Amino acid sequence: MNILAIESSCDETAVAIYQGDIHTRQGHLISESIASQIDVHARFGGVVPEVASREHLRVLPMLVADVMADADFEWDSIDAVAVTSGPGLMGALLVGSSYARGLGLANNIPVLPIHHMEGHLLAPGLGGDLPAFPFIALLVSGGHTMLIRVDGIGSYRVIGQTLDDAAGECFDKSARVLGLPYPGGPEIAKLAITGNKKRFKLPRPMLQKDNLNFSFSGLKTAVMYAVRDIGELDDMSKQDMAAGVEAAVGDVLVKKSLKACEREGVSRLLIAGGVAANVYLRELLREEAGKRNISVALPALSYCTDNAAMIAYAAFCRLCAEAPFDGVGDVNPRWSLSDLRL
Ligand code: KG4
Ligand code: ZN
Image (cartoon, rainbow, N blue to C red; front, top):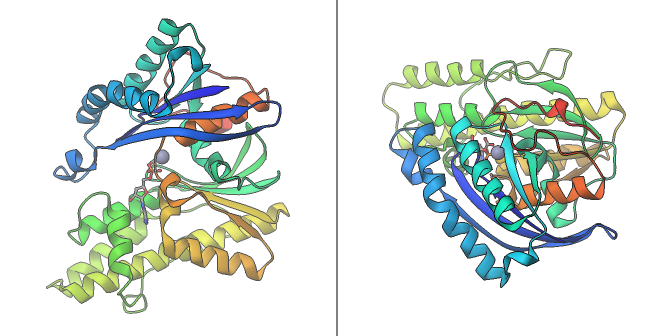
């Protein structure tokens, strides 16, 4: 079967076609197209929801036409349309969802609502790297930082989460303090390569607490004070601070993830979401997990940040598992992952 998927929950508009066989549970990506709005929002220092909705509306028809042409498909080859229905920005989600419903009606095919974070969570499967169940998933994006025990498709138990800022948000806000453009994560990562991560003593929030929760707002504040104390922010200070932030965030994420594996008695770990594109974090995690015989699954770099391939793949996994599709036709900007069913 062929699934066309649409992702428009934030500042990327993306469309992809995934071809899979429900019986063998094997499949592959046929085509994909993505339009980033980063340049449009950069001058505002962050995503402007209304601007995002308009951009999605402008580019979606072109992207759909692109992937159909690239796959050399007519509409009678498409069996279902999958669409991100939450969480995300209300207007942005509505654009994708309405467009998907239009395609469903016009072509008499079902529309499958997909949870954005479930898409992130299953993304390593696009490269055939989905661990056996149960496994622990660390989901780190611009809006979420969660540790989840995954017992099957649709069976997600949140065992830890951030009490304030998400890890990506911490990167973005620290980057802003350093005068770097949005989104800050990749900018911090670039500068950190040549920085000295030990120069600034930054806190490792929640590390001493005996739970699996996170808190990153204190780290952002520490960066703010440290930058204020430096006065004139030269290039080397920027690099050292970037390396310090990256190391502090990485340290907390890795230690809490390994603690989650230990507590749950699970030796398979998966990390996904935009922050999983951070090379320092990927390497640190592999190294530390390796010492404890914990396997690590990671999406390819391009499937860490928002994309439609992961949405198509999540729909395929739900179909294979005969898991229900809740909320058909609705969008839910605050949809919780724990609401999903097996
Ligand atoms: O998953 P995503 O694309 O969108 C959301 O669902 O939020 O994640 C975006 C977040 C942003 O905060 C961005 O700064 C961060 O992921 N990010 C990174 C890197 N690439 C993206 N953070 C650290 N290092 C990176 N290389
Ligand atoms: Zn995302």
